[in-house]
Structure formats: structure tokens, C-alpha cells
Image (cartoon, rainbow, N blue to C red):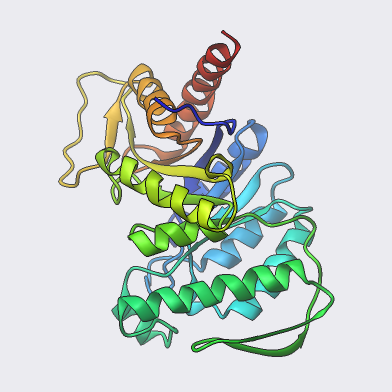
Length: 308
């Protein structure tokens, strides 16, 4: 059993649905008043029932003061990298250094292509598109106020006069599931993030090995890479109430069962970041239980274990 060296991070996810704006605002206030670390939003611009994630994230940044805000994860093919660097630095300044970027190559090729996204025709090209994206984004964020150029196969930036500088070094969290992308996450990201419905626990040993490989190849320590899980599921308040889900990876159980599961992920698989993603029931009530009961108990158990 390998225990992670990084203290646990917790977050709650917000649904960008056009019919759930009030819920999004209420959840952001709830998060900001708690001691949760992250408020995250998924990004699927081709979904007509979703608000634009960046606009919603900016709106919630203006309504909060403490909690960090994160894309979970940003659809990079539909958001050009140089402009994304400008947008990220701007929001980081406005939010006083509270922005974190979750980034992905995108999973719905037809939707991205329909919206004129830079996708690539093969898995190899998609990898290269995303790798170039990360190079430009990190390069511009770390060389703010200086001229920046990059010449790749899919992305080119020509003598951009960069700026503004972000308020802090914006962490990059990479959403990935394939071997090359996982090595890339270990090499270029501060963290890796995925959902329980996409990578099941029995796959996590392989995932961790690939993240470690990427970290070592770039001269980094594997233990410095955050490993995040979007916890899709339902917290049961009534033992007799059970939901039927047709997809594996959705968690369902009591508060104590959730605590036990998260501790298992932390201790067995080195996960240090847990984002609650409610999939049924009242999202606000579910989030409050996670923040008030599950998160504190997990933190207490980890603290007690580390002190013993």
C-alpha cells in the first residue's frame, strides 16, 4: 500500500445546465462558505442545453471570495491556446489567484468538428494537437509580458506580445485515459483528473504507473503529481432508497460508506483529490452532506493516520 505525500483536496462539481443556473449560484455560495478547495464545471460547448462554461466560471468567480475555480475539463479543441492563455490570466487576476485549469483533448469528435475545432484525424494527431496546446498555454502563462512564439504542426503563435501576467502559477490538471496521454499528464501537468465512470478502480494501478513514467521522464517526482477522481454518485440518506444505474463507476451508499470508499482510494491508489459530482437527488442537499459530513471525516481520518 502506497500512501500519497500530498494532503487531500476536495471539490464539488456544478452542472452548467441552462435550467440549473440558480442551483449553480447556490452551490457556489455553499462552497465559498465551507472550507472545500475547488468548485469545478464541465465543458461541452456543443451541448445546446449547457451554458458556456467559461462565462459561467467567470460569473461564479465574481460571486465568491475564497474557493478556487476549475474547468473539469476544458474542451481545448474549441478554445485556441493563445487566446486561452489570455483568458486564463485575466480570470486569475480578477479572482485574485483562484483559477485552476482542467484540460482535455475532448471526447466527442463529431461535435468538436462540427464547431470547427482543431481535433486531428488520428489518435496520434490528437495527441500532438493537445501536446502543442499545453506547450503554448504553459509557455505564455509563464512568460507573461514577454514576446512568445511557437511553431507546431497544428498550432502556431507568431511573436505574440503576451500579457497580463496571472496572479499565481495556474495549475494545469489533465484529463486523460490513454497511455500516451497519461504519460503526458505526468510530464506536463500539476495534476491528473478523471471520472469514476471513465476509469474504474481496477484500472488505477495501470494509470498510476503511466503517470509515474511521465513524471520520471521529465525529471519530476511521481508523488508531486495530484491524482484526482470525479466521484459520480449519490449519498444515501434513506437506507431503503436505491437508484438504478446502468453504467459502472457510479457510487451509491451512506455517509460512512462514502468515507470508507474515499479513504480506500487515498490509501490504496494514492488519490489525493476528490470532486463530488452528484448524479441524482437534490444537488444542493447532496453537496451539503458531502461538505458537512463526508469531507471533514475523511480529513480527520487521514490526519489521525498520518500522526499515528
